[in-house]
Image (tube, rainbow, N blue to C red; front, side, top):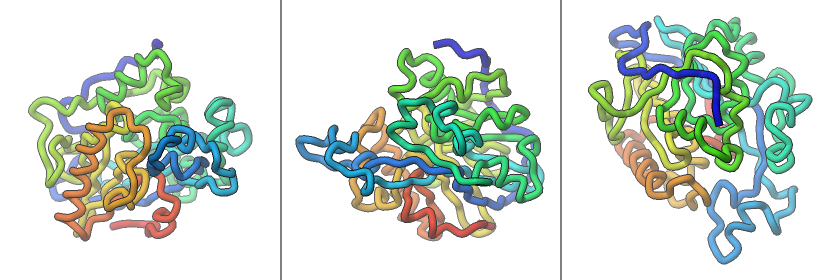
Length: 302
């Protein structure tokens, strides 16, 4: 598989940082997809694979899970986005963007005005005002709307970019190259070298603006180069876990997801999240696709 973009390695902070900066975060639900509960929390037993695929579970019992994105307001770097949610076209013709196979299984849906560009406009912003888009990973439900931000700098882990652009069967790994096969400004973080440091319980982090306001965290396992994002609010941290956890219960005793790419790495990343939660109980940790947790979120975190 060949994509046209040539990413540049990001070895130091992006411009725009300010010493002592804190950020404001707005969670945005940008569509939903549907799946059996066993797809998100492992069912176990002899027929686990069939249960994961929904065999024996009526559609009426499938979960509708959010496709999140997050708008970060930095006092000097401006508007930053984490993930892009579903593309605006999903509202009318989901298969055109998502593909027929995924559409038939996941039934993606997007309500009027629910796409990220529309939600930005209600806040007085245009897609061109978003200077940086951080991708937790490049699976279709996170990357579907990337084409709406042609003027942004996209930041993705080097391992994730490698996996998403070299896999011979990307759709089986959750990737749809049409979402990111654009000659955009891509910057990759390798989580190696002098710019990488630890933070709290997390072993490998990258300070995106050099001021501690937004940190990228290596949390592989769900995908080859999955990364989470720690946003420093006024008096606590806001952790965008991405798909390092699907549900908030997975920080406690809920079953793990059934099929991470690498279960050993997934469990290592999960342990770092669990330790962080125990050490900083005041922090907000947001899982990737929890339909019950999402409505409990506030509209704005400062």
